Length: 88
Image (cartoon, rainbow, N blue to C red):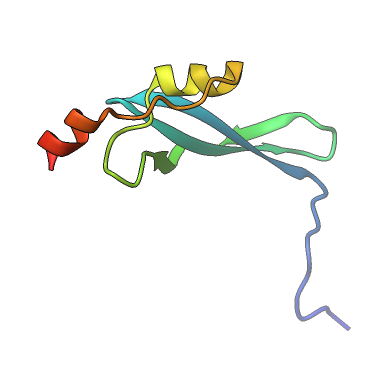
């Protein structure tokens, strides 16, 4: 008797990766995946795709200076009264 169908099983893994890059004053998160075979050898990678970008609720971009300030623990500088008053 002949099998009606067959199943091929390949044991491997997919390793998701995320990296961040500043573009046009915004921090953008990208993602790609590394596919590996059962021996752990890389078979291929998916092309990077943009996931999201980071900005503030007032529309201002999250800049490299903001990122650096957060990393060293400085609070975000608040906009002064006159700047808020005249920008509205």
